[in-house]
Length: 295
Ligand code: NAD
Image 1 (cartoon, protein in one colour):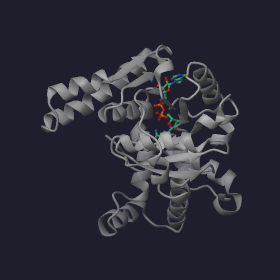
Image 2 (spheres, rainbow, N blue to C red):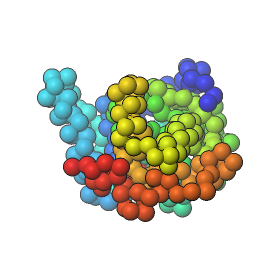
Image 3 (spheres, rainbow, N blue to C red):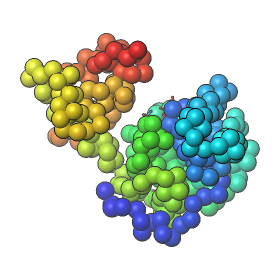
């Protein structure tokens, strides 16, 4: 961790126009959050139904705020109007900053980033919301790698305060500053971190999951561990519940990335609960069954 990001933010102002690539769980959430805090955003996807879902999600979040009396109809309408769904790059030349949140596939991301760069001004910043792909690797697809860095949000975006701003080998200070400024404007707490497997959060989280898995191998009951961590220790949720929320498939993939990145610390020679659930197709909350059954 390179420390809190104040020094980077002080030199930069928040963008006037943003864009997001991908209107899925993360892209939809990032677009909503940007609009909610007053930065207009173009939300691009390749599937019309993804755009519809993204807009519907934003509408649902705003309606909840309306029902709670936190906003009026005017604020709802103006926020929705600030999210501009699109299937093409029209208007991208006006974007000061673009965050990519398409599927976690290095080839797809490299192609999308290179294509997007063609539509941007030379001073525009491009960032990736990748959870696991090295920023310096993705930068190889770009002509202006100094304008690129990581911007790693957490799910659900409107609720999770932290954003990891990942400095690639070639990311410039100006780029980091602009991304930090946007994250701050979005009401988030950015931290600037180095480009390494797991960035910061997953380097903390996965050793914790590994310790949890070892307790299960020793015969502990996951419900009991969750109960102690949540009710007695006071964390928002225990490890099994958290894994179900994160997604067993996502955790399985990230665990592999961490093991490859830190073989002496993070690799294992046994199958753990995450492997067993993954092989059984129990992906957690997203498909109704993981450690728990989700209705
Ligand atoms: P998702 O599958 O919900 O959404 C991905 C979207 O990208 C889809 O709507 C898809 O149509 C769209 N897409 C694919 N190719 C595209 C292209 N060429 N141009 C524009 N859109 C395209 O995925 P997600 O969960 O939102 O994850 C997106 C990224 O965020 C991944 O890199 C993931 O690792 C990262 N991430 C996810 C989480 C999480 O908990 N879901 C948390 C942090 C980071």
